[in-house]
Length: 310
Image 1: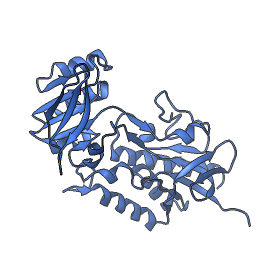
Image 2: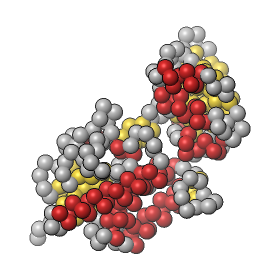
Image 3: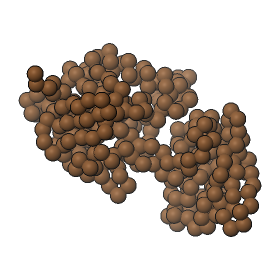
Image 4: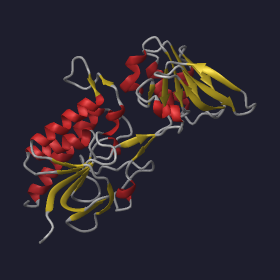
């Protein structure tokens, strides 16, 4: 018996993947969603989401993703809790191999997102969503009149710090070196902001707090002296890593930072492979933007399949 060839396989189950699944399912394409190791994406680590349209009083991240999952399933999307481990894009139908099975598809939508980079501290992970964040524009509102620290020394750190001054009463940029990687204009903007101070040439060795962030412990890289910086918020701004390794190995074009390059709308350099969400968006990293990109990818895949006579 010949193996079934799916119209579209969606790899990833964050806002982009599930929105793509909703649109593809409503177009009667019967999409298969490979949800991955972390179904629901980064919003599963977010407590309250207040900036997703349609929820006047906000919604818990896991609840939002559960709603999106059920909505896609309502229209016929098939969702499997499997992780894609390799893909074959140099022949059609495309093949996706997971940790459990192999699947064939006429088209693919990549929506695997990006992971925030962390220092790897145990308490940093334990307190995620409890004062620890990697997105100032997502969570800054929750830190009104509080003291926060931003970890990093690049443009992202400067941008996050400046944004946080809209809410926090004090922002401290903590950097492991004396010099900054940030562009001169971004660094000057932060230096000129009266709410921002700098602690340089230190290593963060711990995040303090039982149920919420209370501060950090830093170690001076020259003297070895340890001290505590009081803070109610901790923002990691040391970059993101897009989940693109298996795709770049299969010929998908990525940029210098590993993000998938879009050729037109949501199309990649391989015909029939589309992309949406944080996996090709290093700038906004917002759920609503990812959802919009997932919609684009599904519509483009639908048009592609129609042109192929599928």
